Image (cartoon, rainbow, N blue to C red; front, side):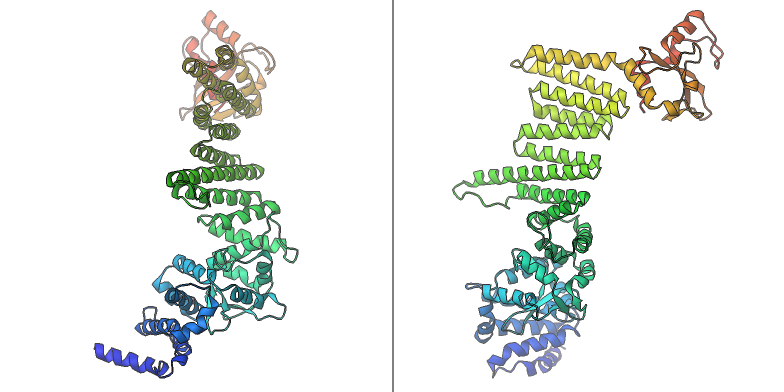
Length: 559
């Protein structure tokens, strides 16, 4: 069985590999590969043998005399021929499936980068010139939707992946990338202007389109005047959305942050900055991404790499928060501010970390719950250390943000939290301005306690329409009514500016167990309890337990 298979392979391959003519060995090996690529299965033994022969033919002196001048001096002959052959196979009809049968697309992408990254400068320039000149030769697009270029002076045609197009591969300038976008393409996949082909290519190979578009973006995020900004934005948005869950590189992500900002696409600008930050954080953990003083020791180098990358990640997170804020996404902005604080903390920048925690807390107070703000303020307190004054100011701003939303109970609890922070600093830090910290503590404590009636009035004012409606204000577990916007017993009308204490009177329960409450003033409670009045819904006299006041009433009104 084995001898029969070998005989069959020999009969198929031997006509193409006559040993007597070594100069013809390489072109004949390439013809065999081309003939087999489209017809053989992905695990074909014939193709494997033909590939081995192509590698031998290209590595032999006669083959290398053709291939070698295309690459930089000193490259490894065998490795270069192997990856050149792989890229050539990927460009053939049906060839990419054979390449991906032996390695993943990610691995092929990295190997493709190596091929184009070691091209001789004149060869690289000739490849670019061919599509850049008005009457130059067209690019080729493979059946599988990859760009392919001919290697000057040879019969090799090489597929171009995303990394092959990158700044570690072909290293296109903005002008060269622009000329590529304006070039013409031929191939089984599509023909015509490159820009008309890219939408379909983006579906199959978004990384290729992403890398190419990134190369045409200027330092300020602008595009060359030859390109239509709306057309490029549509393409960029599509591939960005497709690739936003992948890591990428700083060099790949940063141009899109600039471009989306230039276009006014705030949300995608924020996402691109956040993606860049993720890459920086990865560099901080794994090392790399920076060129440092070679005189630094190994430990010093690692610490410096970590510090710089964490700092740069924190700055990118700040920028992401800025753009999310402009996109009216306060919660996403807060998330980025928290991430920025964490990165600054990892970089040893405690004052900057404290500032980011503070900004995140204030942002959350404008859109989130007290529990989220409390957690963030505790992180800020740790970063601020003994700086009680700065901590007090951010707590006050958070309380104001809650008040603006009508969450007066949360505002009161924020002041109570601030008072606790002040007390801790007085107890733990003997070198601070104790008198100043104590005065600050008292201000927060008083606001947390004495403002409750005023906060209740503000909560009523904020919900007055719902409270006085036919259905009342429906909150979790309760319905609160305020018929005619006045006390039902003493008929005092509601005035948010009057120094009146309003309470909740429990009037009964609905069929589903939901409590029903009416707003009354403190004088009504005193009069009903003092005179022993009968409860209008319960068969007993009114007691003080029928009323909810203070923090509990504020919490119910603020649900």
